[in-house]
Image (cartoon, rainbow, N blue to C red; front, side, top):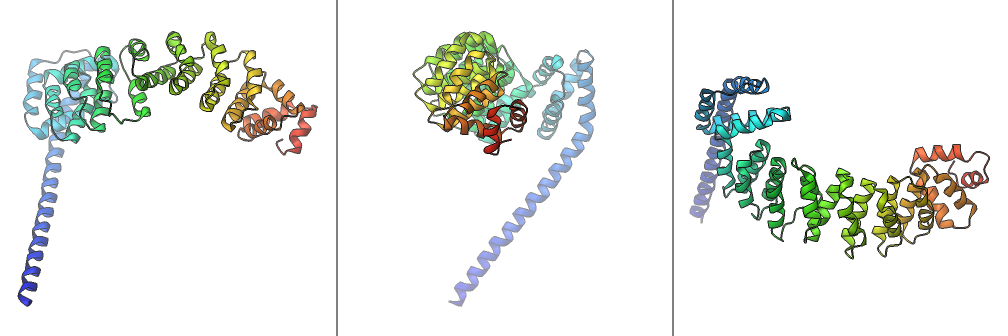
Length: 376
C-alpha cells in the first residue's frame, strides 16, 4: 500500500515539475519574442514612416523600396511588425492617399500573405486576416473573402462582411449578403453597423437589397438607409409602410421618420391606428421629425391609446412640436385622464418641456391643474 502511495506522489510531482518547466519555457519564449519584436520595430518603424511620408507627398515608391519590404516580409516576425505599423498609421492616414497605400500593400505581397491566412483552419487567424484585408481595402482580396463567407463562425463572418464594406465593392457586398447561410446568427445591430460603414455607392446596394426577397436583410438595409437620411430612397422604403410583415412596417416607419419626407406623412399618420402597438408607438415617435400642423390631432387621439408607450411617444412628440401647447391646453380642459396623465409623465421626464410649460401656462386655467398635480 505504501509503495502505491510513493509511486502516486512521485508521479504527480513529476507532472507538476514538467508543468512548471513548460510554463517557464513559455514565459522565456514570450519574453524573447517580445524583445525581438521591439528590436525589429525600432529598426523598421522609421523606414515605414519615411515611405508613408513620401506617399503623402505624392512621390512614387521605388522598386528597390518595394523589394526591401518584400524581403523583410519573408521573416514572420518582421512581417507582423510591418503590418502592425501600417495598420496603426492607417487610422490617421488621409483617405486621398489610401489607394496608394493599398497598392503598396499589394505590391509587397502583404495582401497575399493575409489572403493565405484567410484560408487557415484557425478561426481566430481567419477572422484577423479578414479584418486586416478590410483595413488594406484591396479589391484583390474580394474573391477570397467571398469564398469564406459561409464559414460557421460569427466572428469570421462579421469581419468578412466588414472587410467587404470597407473595400466598397458593390456587387461583391450584395453577393455576400445574398450568399449568407440561413443559419447566420449575427445580431441585427451588427449587420446595420456593417451596412452603415460601406464605403462605396450606398444607393445602389440600398435599392437592390431593399427590394430583395429576404425580409430579414430588407429590414437591415431599410434601417441603415434611414440612418443615411437619403430622401431618394423614400419611394423604395415607403411601400413597406403597408406591408403585412410587422418588422418591415417597423423598419419602414423608423426610416421614413429619420428621412422626414413630407410626401409620405399621411401614411405614417395612418399607422397610429395600426393593429400592432409597436408600430403605433414608433409612428408616434417618427412624427416628431415633422412640423406639419396636421399631425397634432391624430397624436392627440393617440394619447388615449391602450398602450403606455404609444401614449408616451405621442405626448413627447406633441410637446416638441412648435404648436403643441395648444393641444396640451385642450387636453387639460377635457376629461380624458389618460391623456392628462401621459402629458404630465412626458413633462416630468423632460426638464426642457417642464420649463416651457411653466412659461406657456401663465394666466391660463390649465396651469392650475398642472400645479395641483405638482408638475410646475
